[in-house]
Length: 283
Ligand SMILES: Cc1cc2nc3c(=O)[nH]c(=O)nc-3n(C[C@H](O)[C@H](O)[C@H](O)COP(=O)(O)OP(=O)(O)OC[C@H]3O[C@@H](n4cnc5c(N)ncnc54)[C@H](O)[C@@H]3O)c2cc1C
Image (cartoon, rainbow, N blue to C red):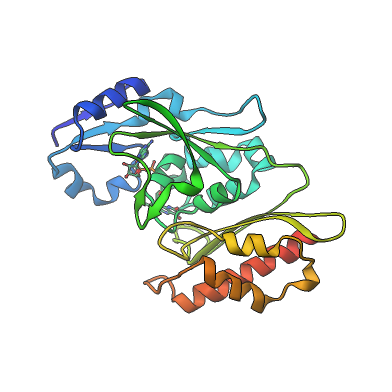
């Protein structure tokens, strides 16, 4: 290791990144980065430790009612924060199923999405809630819709000298229905075979007028099922079949077989989770 730097401000962090461009590794909670610890620490790189920047740990409801989550907010706080539990329950749900309590205490939301695993448990909630990201780099701040963040397998829209600062969730209307479910081998310490976060609104005629379905572990990146959401809008429950959902999902997802599951099981479960989300939300 060349050096370990733990700045107290974002500006110092960005300055450090620019001065050591191309040879710096960013670490927040370290639960992904440190898994390959001996190899990482042997690398000839500078380490930028973001855990001393108070701004990254802010969690509050902003003036317009949206939720502002610093990239360094531990997953454990999202699980119990009263605002998250009440207004963005899918995120509280996914936080409570990320790893296990010891991991949740160190792991951060920013690390979960910057690590860019297609299985990241909290990514579907952020997609379904239309999250926006605030990013800082040498030329200042920029905003990016989260749906444009994951470019391909493990590749994000972050430029080399940029940092994720915060995640912003718009306020949800009071009458939308929220659904989250993770299917894994066990209830804790299991990576998702499939995860679904859905946000739905049914109008007074009993038809869907807003539908966002976002998945983990069904493609190379966390995936918003755009075709499915669009097609289901305007439909009543009686006009939707499981076969139709499975067919529509073919446009949106591309699961693979790996050590955790097969592509066919993932396809089957993805459709059934959508079916369950529709049926439980209309009641
Ligand atoms: C035992 C165990 C169980 C786990 N179980 C789960 C699980 O069930 N579900 C799940 O989703 N994950 C799981 N994980 C993975 C991990 O805990 C999460 O992805 C966690 O949220 C990562 O956050 P972190 O702060 O520890 O990230 P770090 O390890 O510090 O960083 C992760 C990546 O993000 C980058 N990064 C971090 N912060 C920023 C930033 N602000 N700007 C730019 N880049 C940044 C780092 O450079 C690194 O590439 C598990 C890990 C372990 C060790």
